Image (tube, rainbow, N blue to C red; front, side, top):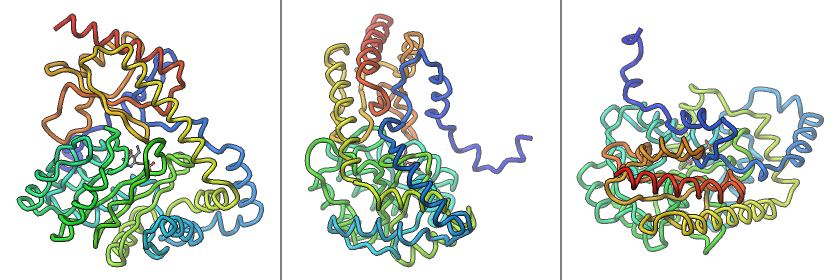
Length: 393
Ligand code: PMP
């Protein structure tokens, strides 16, 4: 059976996060492992109303096949939101996808030949390594500093490898929570406007800033780029809706690739989400999510200060859903994972987020999907687990 499968399948890791999610289905376990939004943030009633409206008033359209590009009013809504924030985006340059995850797959499909260089952040979003990995590129990674990627190394890598794409999550990155500074965004514009590499800006968390000032998308400083957005973290991930913003030539190729994949994204979902967005106070909804996640993030940081050994380092994200912990040198977060699971607490060991040469003493904690009581108890258990691991060393 084994040699029936395409070679590419042996090169892509299974998602460790999805595997862990199976373990953490046990209700006794406090899980900081998944990347789930808090279900309390879902607009349950409003989506029920929007669904009833669409199905009673436009069911012929909503239940029928439709265009690959997506529901025009939804694309216009998205373009309008960008315009209000000063970005010159037209609905013609928006393709609706099945979450931004499909965007990553389509980008891989239209750009990558086997062996092409793909630049990624170090660490990076695990499922981007999977999505691009299926096209068998050569990954080259650039370390992330507290204010974004290391620009000297980035310049060097771009010159040395002439990559087709650089995949980046500039706002509240998954897994680290790191955000690129304004200066870095501008410098990146200068670097990429001089060569062929396309900057792929994945921004599913940008709207969930709960501290500090909004920063312009890197797209603002680039002549050519691809920007990905998603409704997963601001409305509902189960609706599976995201989008890609790209110029005409890239858009034409994406549309062809999407036709081959699935013809178009779920049209009923698109119409419901559009109805929801136009009938409700979206700013108020976003503010509620921001408030909720800030409380949870603050609680996690307070508890880390209280229960973790003082030499453990951690990021202090201004938005998003994750923070990144670095244990002291020589400690293994995989070993910690085993101990922590016995204590009924879970997280994702950092090595899952590297394409090669992982930093074994790192780990990702999610704060969006646990209330403050769970965070308090879970971080206490994790702190004990770290101390147990230290004693074993
Ligand atoms: N990009 C990043 C950085 C993510 O963290 C996620 C979700 N975990 C995605 C893309 C995919 O999100 P979706 O397909 O639900 O839009």
